[in-house]
Image (cartoon, protein in one colour):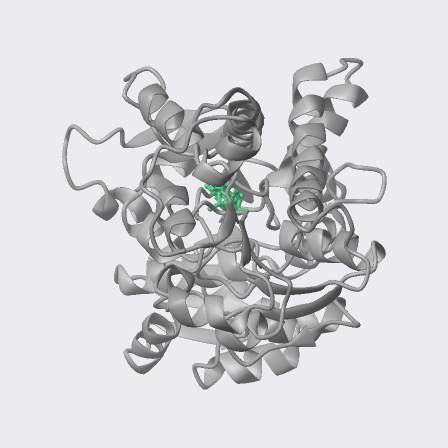
Length: 456
Ligand code: UGA
């Protein structure tokens, strides 16, 4: 099929490159000339596992091309994907200005029938807005164009895996023929008949499925963080509790890792946009608001824990930070709780020496007055505590003996639960995870030591 994708952010670029690799002829469009010039030579403006290879391969196979010229892309395509950003407005709702401006440009250059597929996450009501722009220019739905809403469920860092192994393809449209045509693009991905496959539904349902999915993931994370904080106080271990929960087939075990709270460009944005959408429709979404509040509280809870471990004050303390990205396998620091935690530590007088395998260039643009270290050991050197804020694999394989020697005081606060409390206590660390029980913490509460005292 001949396809064009407007917007070369991570959703647009992953969709374009992946559709090209399925044998379609794809043109990716962006108005940013520098970005397009780089993409033409296979240079990706952000890190996404496997994407550079896929783009280069499809560029050479001439199945994928890049342009800033909307007319070129639109004229030679049957299906036009819109994958521009819908950032959060300061008032809380989704900012649709990019969607509106692309639609206005599209109307001007469109000739002949086209299927417009909206990939961007947009609130219910956006379709009316788009239809209105088309109607004003005398373009009739069903004749000149049809609209399909096809939300994405790609995780940053795992976006290609998620594209090629979809849990479901959601197609929302008023026109069955247009919906079927878009479904054709994704059919090669449905390999087994028992797989959930393609859901044909209304436009409103498709949009709500996306919002509900991201909000439910956020809800699970806030829930498990709440349980973790209670576990800590009552002598239970959240890992065991989450495992016990996950065995229940009705619940499953995803998104039950306790930590520093959720971050990134999507979960918080979509949660806030859904809250605003509900309020605009005269409904107060108490549960959704509590998910967000809990996420903000979790950041403060981590800071409280660090402070407590350091004897109640952060003033003049030097803290080594491992991890700035909002999760592992990405350089993205948007809405990263790691950055929020660092700001709060600095506010209380701590000095910070941080390291992240990929996210330091992006963090440096936002986070000032922080020393950036060349590796994890250098972040630990001379620090009064080491705090783990992103679950990078390389932090799981550290030489902990070396870390202990480098730290001024052997305190480790593990915001991602990547280590085992018992082993850390055995090694002589004052170690605290999230919702985990360490022998040290038990002793402080007057409990019994559960492990033989070794390595002290
Ligand atoms: C999320 C959704 O998972 C995707 O399905 C969706 O397509 C995407 O948003 C989007 O709307 O574009 P993403 O933002 O890449 O994907 O991040 P996730 O992998 O879902 O992680 C979000 C945050 O939750 C991270 O900070 C992560 O560390 C945290 N998390 C995740 C936890 O704290 N605990 C968990 O158990 C899982």
